[in-house]
Image 1 (cartoon, rainbow, N blue to C red):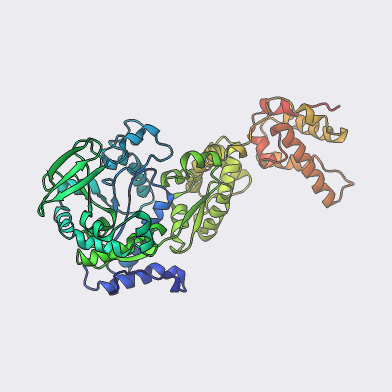
Image 2 (cartoon, rainbow, N blue to C red):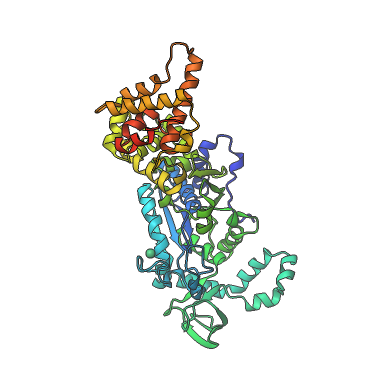
Length: 523
Ligand SMILES: [Zn+2]
């Protein structure tokens, strides 16, 4: 019998239609359905990051495709916060290792008291980002669901069928794997229980089930305290199904028709395959249609940062540099079998430009200009507007309002080395390298700036190009002279060979800070 329901995306020629074809597959498999359910989920064991966002996007796009076909459809997202705490991720104090083995919802906030629990600390920013991105989600809090008792019947059913589940799990183990782990099939089957119990003494699942009474009670050993305890699980909701039976059980509980997964769940013989058999054989449910989605990468995050954060960038952090519309567009345009990268470096200029070229009606300010002009006007919107007007660049006010703060974050938080800062004193060592003619050009600029009261941007743009002019230069020579002159001015002002558009830059600078830097006399 075919248990799984993998969607073969590689056979689709027109990749843009993948979600529509997936929706057709789901409708064919379940023709008489009132509400179609697409699902995604995550254990909030650390930063819920940009890769997890692809899980939601994949389920979201299929939900939207179902709706386009006139069907009712929902997206449920499971916070698997009743899962055990496995390890302390980077960015969390090492002393949190004392909580390993507890449910994520029963551990304190890792930072302080900003949230009610460890899980909530990582869930909240993700929820906030999804709201900003306008993605409608029905959340499922697994701790609340377990404690409400809605899973009781399914958990007891799994306990009664424990040997059958053990057989299914054994069927996915090779003899080699069994040998390496020292698993004897008969022994494994006798001792297997599909649940973990959180000890009533320690709150941790470092426990061993000793007996199940065939009804609602189990006896377990709390390994850390050495105590034995018999608990009625219909009264004390301290048990949770192991991952594979748990996934299988929840597909049935929520009527899931579609769920995507990353490589770890998708691999042959992995959790999707095993849960598909369990859901059919134990829970009498047909496995949802499944798509594996590929990796989302990130570039330009300095090694210092990625080291301390383990590249765990949350969607909320991405929204510090990406407009929500642009971030959605980056994720939505790729089919799940295509990987792509997000960018904290100048690659982001290209991504914004590409988005803008497909959305010309928005008349958005190019992101590189928001960065370049933004920093020379100290991120003041009104001053930026003056520059744009004078340079006859017309962009929508809305785009300027949106992109200026994003450009500022991008530059100051993630690319401070690209920031322009005025030299504090005269760059004397550089000035000494200039010949008399070059010094004279700088002096001309200095005197012209001193003389003009309130020059316009246009005036100064004209001025800087006119200073190197001379009747005996042809066009190519003049360009060369201008480039050399600009380079000299930048070195005197900011100690670099290049910088923001020069006339505009000079217009935005405070005269009393800039002029002394240009006040040189040569050798
Ligand atoms: Zn918190």
